[in-house]
Length: 385
Length: 146
Image (cartoon, rainbow over all chains, first blue to last red; front, side):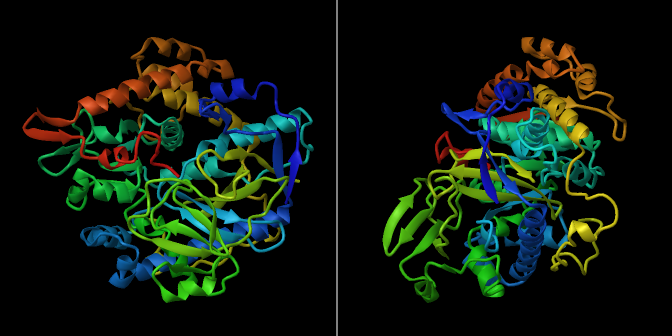
C-alpha cells in the first residue's frame, strides 16, 4: 500500500457535476481529492482486504443469529425491547441485505483491523462505484497512472444484480433525508441501479411517508409502500412517532430490521468475545465491563450509536487526544483497543470495504489529518498496480 | 437471500478463493465502458426522476436503450430545468441534473414539512410526518448516512 501524489484532472469538477456528483466540495473544502491515490498490489487486495471482508461479514451474520435467539445480546446492545420481534421476524423471514461497508485500518503490513461496520445506512457508494472508476479510466487515458492500473470495484454491477433479487416486488420506494445533498446523491444512485435491474421506483422524503389508518405506510399518492429502501437509521426510526407502527405494517425494508444489530458499535466487543484474538479484530469491551480495564489507559471510546466519527474519542495514557463533537452517547459506550492509525504523508487513511449482497466487491478510502475519520474526511481514489 | 437455504443463512461462509485460483476472468472488477456509461448517465437521469411523488414507471424486464431517453419518455418534466434532459448520448446531456435535483430537494424538503398532519384520501385517513423527527433533534447538518 502506497500513497502516490499525482496531478489532478483539470476538468474533474465539470465531470463530477455532469454525473450528478455535486457534493464533491463540502463547505468550501474538497471532499473528492485526486491529488494523490492509494496503490495496492493485487495480492494485497485479495488476501488483505477482500478475504477478511468476507470473513468479517460471515462472523457478523453468526453474531446476528446468536443475538436474535438470546435477549442478553439485545439488552447489551440497548435495542428497545419493543422492537425485538421486528428484528427477529425479519431475520427468520430471511429479509435480504443490499449492501454494507466495513471500515478497516490497514497499514500495508499488518492484518486489516475492523474499526466499525456501517451496516445500515452507508453512504459514499456513488463516488466509490462510479466516480472513482471514472477517475481510473481517465487517469489511465491521460497517463496520470500506469496503463496497467486496475481497481477493486465491481460495486455497480453487483448492485444491479442484487436489486434483481427484489424484482418480485411491484415497486420500490426510496426514502431518506432528501434535503441533505450527500444522502440525496446516494438515494439517486441507488434508485438508478434499481431501475436498471427492472424495478419501478419512487423517491420520497422520509418525512413524507404516510401512515394510513389500516396500518399501511403510504407515499404521497397514498399508495402502499410494499418495499422501501431507507437511508435513515433504524435506531432513529425506533424513536420516531411511526416507529411503534413498524411491526404491524406489511412494508419490507432495505436494509432489513435485523441490520439494526450490526450497525451498533456494541458488535465490536461481541465479536471480540465470540472470536477472541481474530487477526482482523481489535480487542473491545463494553465500557461498563470490568474487562475494559484490560485496555489500560489507551483506547478509542465510541458510542453504541454514532455516525461519521461523532462522539468518538481517542484516549492515550488516560488523556483524550482527539474527540469529535456530536449528539450521541446516551445509550452508552464501548472501548476499542487503540491501534495507531497508519500515516501516509501525514494523512490517516481509513479503508471502506464494500459488500453487496454479502459479496466483497469494492474499496473506497477516506483520509484526514485527524486520526478520527469524520464527515469532512476526503475521498481519495485507489488503484491496483 | 432468497436463494440461500435456511441452513446456510446466517452461517459463516468460507473465505473467498483468490482470483488466481478461479477459472475464467476475475469477477471483482467492472467492465470499463459499461460502468462509465451507466454511471455517467445514471445519476443524471436518476436526479431527474426525483420529482416529488413521481413514479417512473417502466415495465419490468424491458431493456433501456438509454436512461436519458427512457426517462424523457416516461417521466414528463415538472420543472423548467428539465429541458436539459432533451439531449442524449453525451455527457453533456445530464449537465442539467444538478440544478434539477437541487430544485427538487429544496421543494421536497419544504413540502415534506407542510405535509405533516392528517389527510383523508378515499376511505382512509393518512398521517404524515411520523418519521424524521428524531433526525431534526440532532440539527440540520446530520445526515441519515454514515
